[in-house]
Image (cartoon, rainbow, N blue to C red; front, side):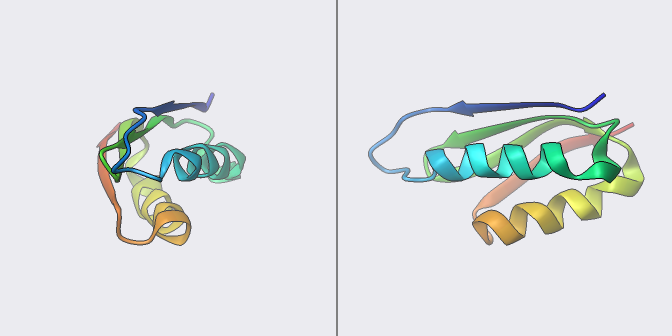
Length: 80
């Protein structure tokens, strides 16, 4: 089952807190990511993706993240 958590570290430098929530929702609605467990965090202006997902889903996760926040994300997702 997919578990998405959007955690925002409020920072005057950031401005991406809403994008973290939007990205979390987009990942939650991606049907092929049902086995993924991803936490989306806004950390000082960079969206950080943490958790684990099937290795065949990593490219799709990156595509979704790039479509929401452009290049301002870092994926720390471990393949399972």
